[in-house]
Image (cartoon, rainbow, N blue to C red; front, top):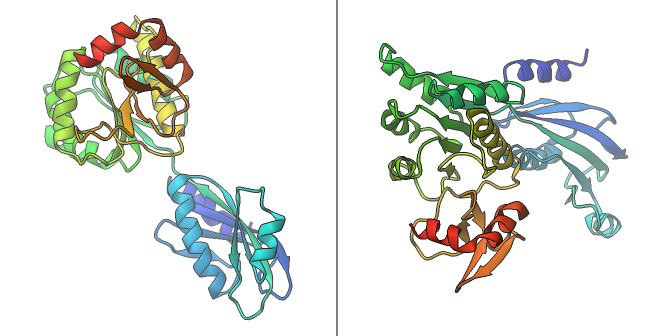
Length: 319
């Protein structure tokens, strides 16, 4: 078996992110071989050979971008980039860069990021928590949980939460009021993409404020209070479905959005009054005018729900 592919398999087993690079086209003279593979690790370590030093430098830059946004792309290194750009002007996935190697050949690389499945950390032993764990176990998440019981080793548990709540991870707090203040203090230090709080609106607001006090406004964590999309859920199973659906929505967004606007008058980022997701008003196509304000929504369903009862959602937002 190809040694590079063996290394890729090992990294998959260890849940380590990497970029797999494949030579898909060459035009002599070049030292790159059609079909050759290489791996770029998160720290920039390159395993395999897909071209000389000038190719390597450009590849490392593009691989870093691919690991950041999770999107594959084609990288074309050409001695005549302006000609190739006019020929491929409709291909948004193709990056064209000048070939600076003295050989003067052309190399086209397929740059494919392989990201580790994100951690979903569920805190609590409530029915909602148990159903979230059950649902998420069938999806591409590494599910971790902590029941939070009086006889727990709190310091060990604290270190465990910090360890598994990796960059880009997700957390759901569903404790039914048991030790949720303590859990929020621990999660403040975790580099999360999402925190969903299962609580009443008043209690959830207090926990949200406590959580945000320990974080910067632009850290990219979406805070959902109460957790879940507005599916008019009533029973724990339905609430769990709405929470997992919201996590999938946040995960699949091309760009991570800020958690909440922080009173600076910036209207580029607003809160969807229906599902309480944070929305970029300049980018979302789902908007509505009501009163003297333009409202932004994450999806057409939220916009329609708002238009049916705008006074209700405005009152809730003001409250």
